[in-house]
Length: 151
Image (cartoon, rainbow, N blue to C red; front, side):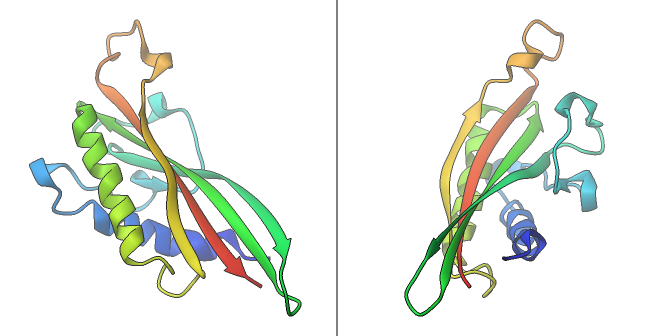
């Protein structure tokens, strides 16, 4: 069984590198866990001055299938939530597409997996913030990353 941290290390590096030099001068992720967490927590507890934009990478789901020659193909899907503040939907879309293009450019995650691809992405209206003073300032982008490993 593949160790999920083996996958997450290159995923975080690819996410971070894809977010530098974006059109429109969008901010890069803060360093360390201030910008990329391998878990999830309530977004409203993020410090808007030091932790935004922020990615939560969570909910790995795996599915294995027997292959020829005693191999097992394991497909793992990871959900990644990008939280931004005061960014338009178009800006969040730029961020998500930059990550998708970076994964397409390195589909083996530097040799860690057989292949990786963005199997879903979109921008989600934050229902929890409706009616509050910050209702229009936080925006969430979601990415589902799928990877396949032969074991």
